[in-house]
Length: 371
Ligand SMILES: CC(=O)N[C@H]1[C@@H](OP(=O)(O)OP(=O)(O)OC[C@H]2O[C@@H](n3ccc(=O)[nH]c3=O)[C@H](O)[C@@H]2O)O[C@H](CO)[C@@H](O)[C@@H]1O
Image (cartoon, rainbow, N blue to C red):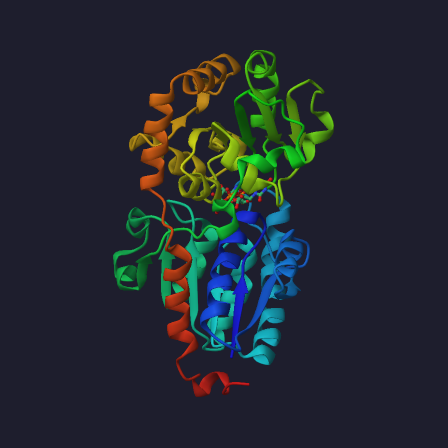
């Protein structure tokens, strides 16, 4: 019995599906999993590390600005659909689970041509272009937030189920005592963690670097910068790192305050760990569709995070907010409680149950029987 996962481009379109896979593996003996991603994306490494077989197909990205690359990429989607058709005909999975990103579009279209059931999951509050396309072909449309259903046409409503955004279980099981195995933080000083999202965030990096002299007066800073790590200043108490791998759970558990982008994955993890968070969402002015701004505002409306956007995202304000939270335990605890209320610890289980339903269905004749 086989399942195909698809998605990629950034970690937020990969890690939640791997969390679901961990649950499914345990519940469905003999399940074989295959991931279809893009040939050039970063997902191959993460997927193979999780022990899932990976196939790359061509994928096209739609840019929100005029570019000749859009024409080339529409062609790539066509080639990606052909390649996915050949792959899926051979693999004959019982269900395709799309975790989104432009990478998922060709495999989902191919699955629907072959009559293979498709389940899609959208992590953000408002669906991205890839989900708007793939959801048309889906038997179930899973969402992280209840409000996401309102962004789809009303007639799709019976197919929409709110499950939450799955978080890898190890993220919740950090040990603050282990931080010093990875970073030489000075004991007795509060820890500020800065997360730039899976690719790092230049805007957040510049902001934190400008605020650094003030921040370092009273705290240690671990800063996940992405590839900009080469440009990071060297200062006592400041610990820049391009990407946090197995150290992430430990630094998350040790941090008193976390400054973060508002990607859906980061938000779900901050909620799962109950962290006092200062969110600096990626805005439209930097080419985003505004998904992070909407994720962040939803938290701010519930008193579950402090959000710095637009003119608020300046060094002096960052210092003021972080210092305020570190000094005022009551405010910090209130944020921790509110964000924890938004956690969905059952999300991976809920999605696994939906997929299990399709896995146990007898394959249709149209897609030619099971292996
Ligand atoms: C720039 C961009 O397009 N961002 C989008 C992308 O975010 P992106 O994938 O960057 O961000 P997310 O917050 O959703 O996920 C990041 C994931 O990477 C992990 N991580 C990150 C840094 C690190 O050092 N180590 C590590 O393991 C986090 O723990 C998390 O699981 O997809 C998200 C989900 O659709 C969207 O909400 C974001 O708007």
